[in-house]
Image 1 (tube, rainbow, N blue to C red):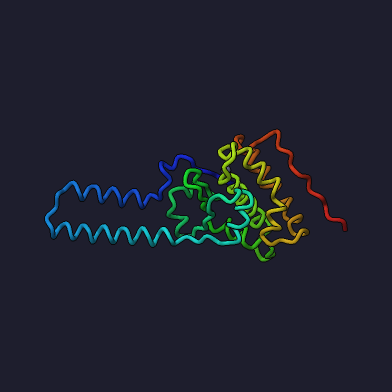
Image 2 (cartoon, helix red, strand yellow; image 1 turned 135 degrees about the vertical axis):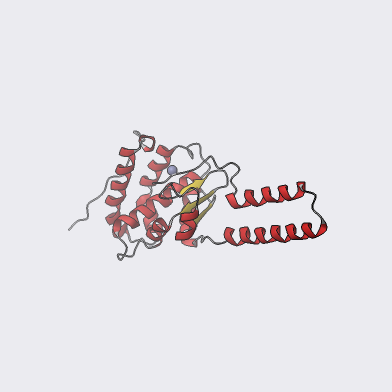
Length: 212
Ligand SMILES: [Zn+2]
């Protein structure tokens, strides 16, 4: 889960660098005034397209409020629409990513829906647990601390704060506890498959079985 990118090359969206390249090319052609007006119109249109696309994502306040607790107020969590996520050049990071230079996280619909509906039993428990876990994980990438680029340390914090975060997102204490085994299962799945998520010094809180 939980991937980050730190090879963002300046942190801008691909669109904005593309449009500035085009402007640069136009200037070198020394166009006539009609052509210049045409290029200006094209540049304006491109700028509008970029501006509209840049505002198309959603940044739900509840996710951002909870993420800021763990990022210590830094960064923004964005929820991509299905189309945006499909078009995102980083969507190979299946469960979301954080741009650690520009301080923002992008999450796919699966993860946002899970985190936003943590208390809604109509969503599967695994999805609600995964959404919460990924949100906290990415928040620790946003936080400016010495281990923000260390997947193992970041993932350790995500599992440590899982139940607390689930409650902050709106789950009851009992529901957060019910979801915790799913979070543990995801954590185990991830750390067993990808060694760089494994922190052998991580102290994972035990699951406390409910008293019947
Ligand atoms: Zn990560």
